[in-house]
Length: 406
Image 1 (cartoon, rainbow, N blue to C red):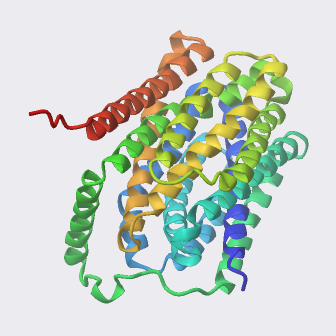
Image 2: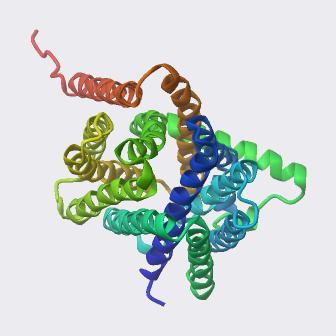
């Protein structure tokens, strides 16, 4: 079977994820009318990701990553369909928590497997295609879910959502590739031995990252980026309500859809940039971060569609640049530790989101949506600029000529 089908499977799974994000967020907001409840659904989804990311990297390095993805898709389909008979706020919170957990297991195993299947020399090209497919899924998922939920109701959206996960699992069942569980022969036996083994695995990752300063700085920006991400994930449905309360889900989907189109454009251009190698990939990642945050600040500070849509498009371009290059940097690590490196990345993302979803509703109590976004993304811009200044200063110290005068 064509290996690229592996990438299209992920895109189809993403389609379901984006659809349930729209349907669940609209469902909880309509049911409660509360920004706090909306933040809670996002926070519990993130909390599930936090808990799963503590071990998802270890499991991805020790077990068959393909099977992990299959089980994750089947479980996500089952739990999302539970909302049809039980659409109450408490059940929504539980489902979001479980979706966060299973999505973490899927994402870590998937990302860690890319260099194994396609080769290290094709990582940037492959990640650009992944980001492009993800963006297409986002456009289709958000716009589709916005229209379907608005006109046919959330139940129909959830049924389609569950079906995408099942189809993804069925395709993965048909696919075969060389096993990636490189440590199977040395896998610990017994519960206590496995617990001890997980502890040593996490210590190995910590030691590895400490010895890779550029990787450490990228992960620092990624952590603050996840924190800032909570502001626009919470803010976009509120912005959609400000634009037109009677068609909130439609505009919610359209904003993310336009963002996704910009993301697709970026992923078409990124692999063609021949200069993007070595340390330049880090600087491009940081520059993309600053421009991404600037875009979010601008379009979330207005309810004028002539400002919202163009800047959502531009933001999608730079967001795709940041996420694609970040994944490429992480995938350059060795296969035996790559799953755990992505597990750490998922943990940082989840922790940043969790903190953000705690802080954002508090700020919204006393500040406007625009000011809240300014604080969150302003923090990311400041952090990234400081990291860039540190790197420039470090580079100058390294290349400073030695005085040979007698």
